Image (cartoon, rainbow, N blue to C red; front, side, top):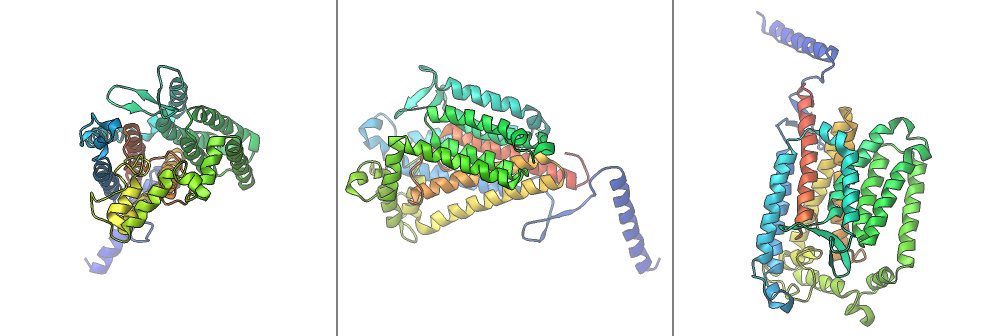
Length: 419
């Protein structure tokens, strides 16, 4: 056979197969997908780079938690602890989180779509239970944890995952009325208000800010009218302003943030911020070297949790902080890309959920970094995937595992199969 005729016959056969696939209602078979960079990439079973970036952030977090906490037994408060106490607990937390992630990634998205409202109700119940005396555990005046023996579980972390799923499910069910403000928005507004009341009772304003950002982001991405969205944002901003205005504690934090070096605040409300800035200043470009932080030696409180980035800056310098920022930027961008892909395949719940998790990871990392760098007022928010905290690491891994499952099902559909 003539080579040209043979080539033309293969083209005709391929087009015929695509036409039959479309008539059968399946997605056309493709052996590549376009990435955000415009270059084709081979479809694999899962997004390996997403997994590796997540694992590398966890590994760096483990290393820095050990470095930030190794000197804590010198403090009389932790005199009975071994130097490796926080290291071993963090290793255990990461192990549990990875196991939970491996199990979660096996569960189809259709299951989460069906159970999203019930998961949200369960999160609300846990937020109520944690406020009950002698059940919820209080630390420094905040009641945020449920003691489970092997770890202290923080219901607000589950509420972040539950809100992402509930908001995605809600927008999918309300697609036909999203132009009607009251019918489309008020149930979601009530749900967010209930969560806000419970979280502010703990109090945990930082978690409420993240959950509000997740809910608002999914409403916007789901197609809520722009004027409605602007109105909701104004209401939320007004609510935050009122909370700060009528709370002496929060108002003092704002004043301390605006002038941290004032003698009135430097040894009080701005103590953490000033020492975080000193740590970052000492790091310069390349840092003082791993393990060489001075601020972690009982000068900077919560160095292994909320202010882990300051220790990274002091020991690894600008380069280390920049790498962490780039990693979180890439992670958030990749989650948004997975979400857009799912929506293009008419999987609205999966797509909005993945983008909601992108808002969570990027937004919480942005707030934590802003606090450490003095760009935002001090809030009790950890650095996702990195800071010490069992329930935070666990729910981060579960949330990303569900997003990875979204990507896996996207790839299955682009191969011509079904999710």
